[in-house]
Length: 106
Figure 1: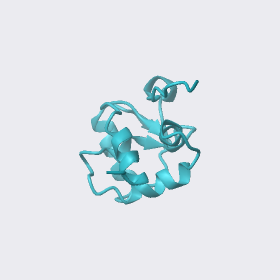
Figure 2: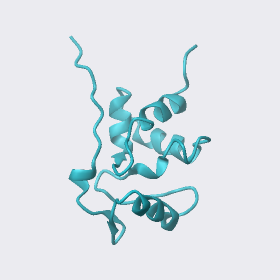
Figure 3: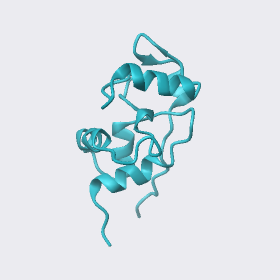
Figure 4: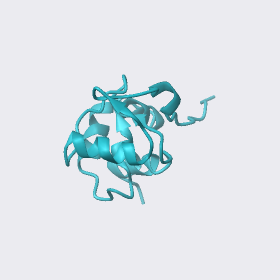
């Protein structure tokens, strides 16, 4: 069975551990594309939340960005995972940033 783009996004997001964040662009890169806006759309439609933790997806600069149940709720969920947010941005973003390992093509 071929998985939809959204399902492939959720599969990748399941790999982001508690206490870490990733970006829309990083998920797109992990899928081998540059469709970061489509990733954002998939996160907005996530039927598996909170098990598939779309609150762990932030902007490329660490800004919180949108969240279906509101940015304040996203910040609360991140804080529960010991991800500090100040002025709408993840503190120590580079240390918290989760990158996907993408196999090199020949």
